[in-house]
Image (cartoon, rainbow, N blue to C red):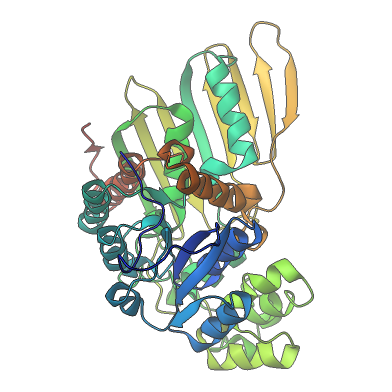
Length: 431
């Protein structure tokens, strides 16, 4: 398969002397802005066009990428496509499919924020489009790219643990992160985004399959929206945290969360950046009073689950259990891997390997601190962009750690788990 790196708007257009890769950005929110900023900082790429409907974010993008055309609708770029190598698509989840299909048809390689789409049908449409057009697709499963994951994968593949028999994996969403993103924020309602398991945990389902190295064959799942419900609201609570008499004793105080971000550059970027551009107490409180992020967590219109467990059986009989829960500190994932010759316990930075022959334990520091978007997902964001730019430069898709079919699988597993959760069935996936 060949991949043309420059796709000119007109046959008569002369190639630019600038040798940097040319990227288009669709959606300059938190994820799109972060990917674009790092790509530009490498010196290997330049952002030539940005589509962002929010005026504040568009203005920020213009300041960071002065060479870029700024548009408020990605369709304008489809109608008059700039000469570019690839597009970064980081719109809201339910707005992924149309730009992905259209830009694939134009011949752009694609970096697509996860989840790929909010329905199985649309995810398959994207997969079919990139296959039909021959463009490369990198889904932003950033956990695959972290130094920690590379180290764990190396240990597993080396045979030190013997044959993998089972895996336990925990995603500790974090009490305040759940409130920010999945109770007050953009991913609070399934109809406006996607099921919680897909929006938050397709990362993890993908990660477990990557480590085990086998496809999922059976899935069952349980979970619900247990806590963030109107019946759990304290009797004297008000609709907004700023007026609430129990705010000081509430774990989910918006005032406490967002004011505590001030002065911390990573936390000002996220989560505060999703709330307001203000960097003063007065500005933050104004945003909390006027916007959705000051709402009482027991008086929101959220419907996604706040806890879920998934049981998985892989080809060959290997099993795994996955737990996603809001009610934890916000920290790295925790994993236990059980093999026939040894076991591994990891916390996202360190792993301890126990050798069943000698009984010895060895601890290795593999990862970087910073599990969140504000600090780059433990190095995963930067390594993802590096891999994507390497693939564009060489035309070799193997730099991307998951092909379209592999990315599709993790989404299909998430939907199978949702069907199981809702119907009480054990779902079977075929190859």
